[in-house]
Length: 143
Image (cartoon, rainbow, N blue to C red; front, side):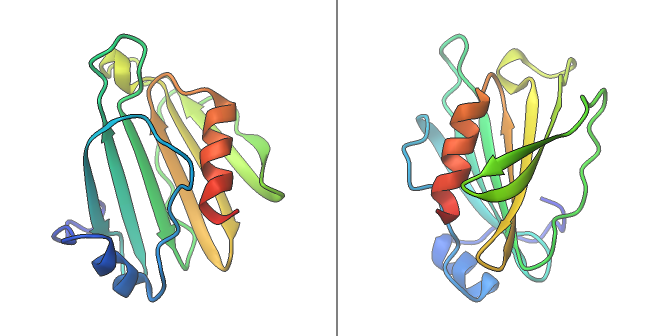
């Protein structure tokens, strides 16, 4: 986590830190092994779903960053050109990189950023995700 603050006990701590309920996906996600919830700066939170990637071709991680200010930029080695996408009617930006050095279930990485409901959101997905699945998850968060 960016600030190395201790993790929250649960989502209620994240709600208090954000000052409102943290928007979460309203669609089913792949099977999670565990979920971490932690502060991400003075007005942000991150929810990390560490997914069960034991089956071939399944993704390993999904991270939701929610804050009142835009999230800090993340460096992506060998990044493909960013593309504009529609996230439930809101303009979004999708960035992707191969992450060649990572284990197969963690590559590639996709980063989707958008704003909704007065919040700035970033969904980072590691593994073999399909764009339509990421957009469905993102749309369900603030849709």
